[in-house]
Image (cartoon, rainbow, N blue to C red):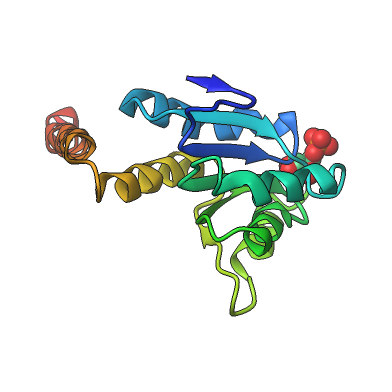
Length: 168
Ligand code: RP5
């Protein structure tokens, strides 16, 4: 379930631009697959800083357990959110046009000591893994979700084992 402001959301997916959605929707797809309630919205750090701070300040009180934040270029969104909330921020570097996301990765991963952002791979792998990481966090206190996560992994293992057959 995804709405711009979902009162049931336990995970917030935010991004700097609608152009990031092509990447960030991978996180939404994973959370949907696991039945985790989330919301998805654009919260640009430099184009709507007041809204960004308001989102971060309200996050804990609204029941969000993690924020998955994707941005490209000078990707300050995850770090600035983290500066304003203790809700864990999972940063996703979005591939940029000129530097292919290396700029985004360095912007997000190089947080100075004191305000952490958990940083994932550039692009769709990072978005998907950020969602899986959020699921793993929630699963520490949710046995049914943990069973789902283990089943997801077992399916991946079976698929990888079956790959050898494709070599014939
Ligand atoms: C960042 O600038 C966004 O996160 C996006 O990755 C990038 C480009 O934004 P648009 O020009 O597509 O709106 O703020």
